[in-house]
Structure formats: structure tokens, C-alpha cells
Length: 94
Image 1 (cartoon, rainbow, N blue to C red):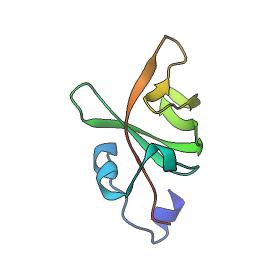
Image 2 (cartoon, rainbow, N blue to C red):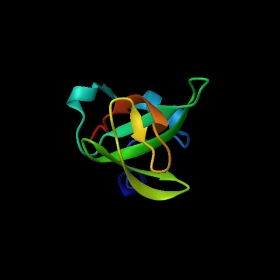
Image 3 (tube, rainbow, N blue to C red):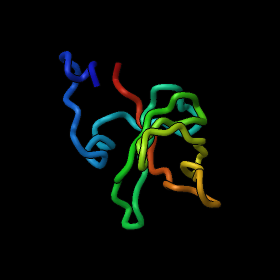
Image 4 (cartoon, rainbow, N blue to C red):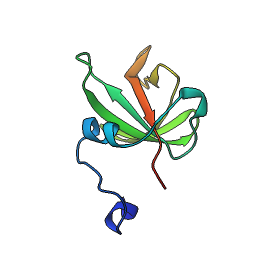
């Protein structure tokens, strides 16, 4: 966030808008620092997080947490399956 506040590119408020402004990266090319976006059942992007490792994501869902990330989504901490289904991974332009 500090990068954006100090003269970086404008950062839209909502995850759905953020997913539109950054370059899309394929799953196999993901790396630490990339943003992952997740959609609801209607296909609208509603959640985002930052990769701290290729298979780990920092995100806020109830509270800030580190979760396992797979090609399909964020592995749930409390139930079988995923808490969020992955839509796209984007790379910040700096």
C-alpha cells in the first residue's frame, strides 16, 4: 500500500476493479508478491490476497491469515475443500 501512496499507480478500492488493472499471470508463472483474485458464485471478483510463497497466500477472511493456495483456490482451514475459488493471478507492475 505504501508504494501506491508514494506516487505509484492508482489502486482501485474494490478487488473486482483491481483484477482489471494488473497484468494476468498464468498459474505456472506465479511468484511471491503476485496478487490472487477470487470470485463468488455469480462470477464477480470479491476477494484478493498476496502470495507470500508460490503456494501460500496472505489474505483477510474473518481475520488476517496465511493459507495454502492451490490452482483451484484457497484451502479451507475449517472444512473440506476451498474457502475461495481462484479466478486469476496478477502481477504488480513494479
